[in-house]
Length: 271
Image (cartoon, rainbow, N blue to C red; front, side, top):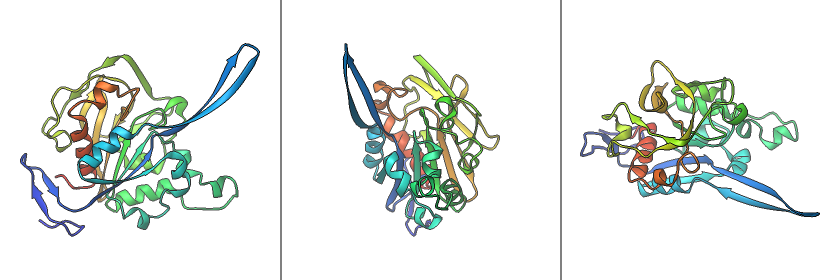
């Protein structure tokens, strides 16, 4: 079987169809800057630290043969693609812990009042045209803390297999909550152990009627997928790293296969 990208498809040992051509993903978000005030009696001083939290996911994809282009949040503000044509160089786009405003408000628009393309609409149109979208949960994913991620009602929500709340959608589970795989034969969980480590939180969403809910937490969607237009989209409602995904999860032997499956399925590289 030949693919739309010109490569050849071959069955895996579990009957999945995997495409043997270069796999490219754009991984966006998972970065932040912490500005701290150190108060020592009468005196105080400040420190600033830049951090990234996507190393586990990045490594998992590269170990599966993916070429990963990483855009931290501050880079995505100016460099996230502004057209479907630009996005076509990627098979999959992963949004993780980055709010809608960063993609909506290019500095040339926010500071200089310049009209530019709506990159949320561009992302939606790219999925309809055959692209693969993944949204990973976090404090600035889906609706996020205080509703500040604000993807509800946007073109990106229309592309996702889930619908979003109109307020803070976090479910904090500090004692841990065990995921339950509902569709063990789905390609997204092929080669992934049946028992998953506990998670410490997730974003609450509702699955669309047409979506496949592969795994749940507290009977809420954890891993959901669907086709949208000619493309596909996946929602993973917990995080790809701490704190919601603790060390026991990122160090789990199912971690890398799961993310490789998610990216490959979204990119239409798994049947």
